[in-house]
Length: 90
Image 1: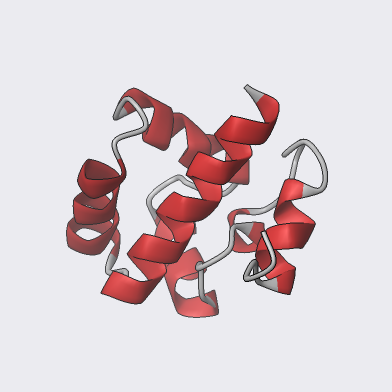
Image 2 (image 1 turned 90 degrees about the vertical axis):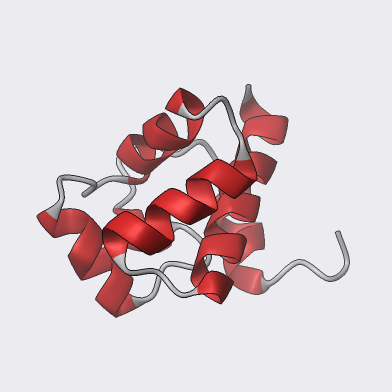
């Protein structure tokens, strides 16, 4: 927990609610735009995709790289963020 980024810590501090997808740790402005154009405008919608993939981080990372243009770093950070959120709230 000590090596947690401030952005990840903020995301995990409360339920997702209606947060925009850009709140997810690892989602850059450019990636957020790509996600929004594909219908992933809210963090809970992206979480839904993660859950549809049975919380499989590798599968989610491949998907967000191939389908949404994420970098490997963005994919890794965002999947970790969603996994950690699930651990805290599900």
